[in-house]
Image (cartoon, rainbow, N blue to C red; front, side):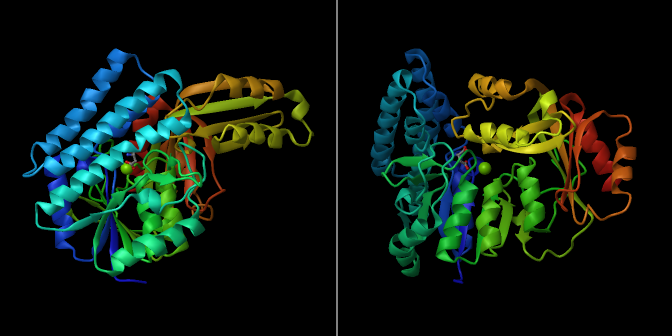
Length: 450
Ligand code: ASP
Ligand code: MG
């Protein structure tokens, strides 16, 4: 293990010149930070996704000018914008050209080529911001390092190939003592085409790079000072958790806490890489360390909320005593590259929720008419929306006596559509009506935490 950190700055942290300067100061204050991984400036990826979906020429002009404006705000505050401006102009022209192509032929491949451009711009601008603070940084095109498969929109990194490329290209630069600035979220497939790792994937990129470079840790700088017991916008009395385990953090990320992309924990767990989450606007405020051995493992750790859940109920009387019914359903859903979340079965039906984080960068609807038609051939399908998933995260939840009674007592006055208990020792999931979700989170937090 080498004695340096990989730091990742999220979209709000690089949203404008002032925010970028705060990040640069964090890098300057911590000489151990040798690799910087950036998201696109806040809002840019959404605008690029809209362009990738194909737009009228009027709409394209509007979206492009919004993207330009975000870059312009940063450029105009640089002391010397000349060199980086010409690079940004080139990228903007490229975006315009791809966006036009997307109107006639919108493919996932084209989409990734387009939505990867946000990270290209933010990383170029950040190098100049550092330079103007007298820090010499080396810009690296992360696609020369992060190798992936060709699953556009949600590409899987090829760990071995990434290791080889990192050893050849990136590690030597770090060893020479260079400060590296590169992009999160994107990679390259074996044919040399740009891919993306799925929305929010920059955290994952940072953890991957830290792993292949054998860094001592990953610092995730975002807009909140760590991971909280629940979303403080829903429960103002929520508090920051100073130290938590990988498995607790993985459950939180999976079940809705937006601070960390769920895949971030894969390399971290694999390589026992501590992950820190802190606020780039307020680095002094402290943050959360996610490690293998946290200071404590309390029974109740946090409550996560994920809105906008889709519940599918599939019924078929011939499922009774039959074999292979579930296999057929899961295969059909898997063929559409969708991951399933909660599953409950009864005699002749199965109810399941679909996981949005499993979907592609371009944000195409999970439940396509094609998928529905295929499922309809297997069973009668009912689709429920307007649901939210509330997850209680903790430790040894399956063993603790009375946990379920406590939860049911606490939630007496709410209707719980589905509950999943026992599969994980770290979580209990409840599906509730979205209009009751905040109240359920509040009640759980109040009764179990405060
Ligand atoms: N820019 C990408 C997104 O908005 C990746 C990231 O920010 O992590 O999803
Ligand atoms: Mg993010």
